[in-house]
Amino acid sequence: MPVEPGLSASATLTVTDLDTAQHLDVGDVPVLATPRVIALCEQASVRATQGRLPEHHTTVGTGVQISHVAPSGVGETVTAEATLDKIDGRRLLFTVSVSDSRGLVAAGKVTRVLVDRERFLERVS
Image (tube, rainbow, N blue to C red):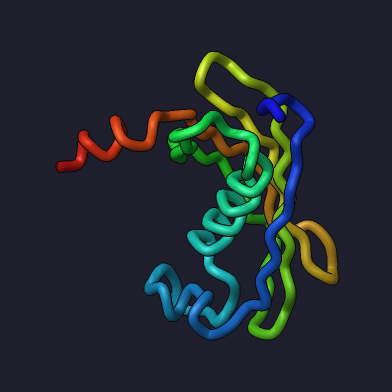
């Protein structure tokens, strides 16, 4: 099955103390931290192409644009949704959103690039 626009997936998280701005040292409030929101969006985008990539290939994140518009407290369940909107050469462009029981938490774009896993890892040795 090929990678094609329209693929989508989700990732869900129940917020714990480890996911908060306080714990990640990016703020002083006990709410879901923006870096954790970004990680959840990337997780959903990876899942959208899971099982569809060419052999020996993976995707790596190269860009994120997120507006984190509402807080989520400890114990709240948040879900990220990612949809592959466009393929531009090796670049995969996703629209992402995160919501909780009260509504929209964050929205934006994630860009990932298709790479040969072995050649990519050679660059870090």
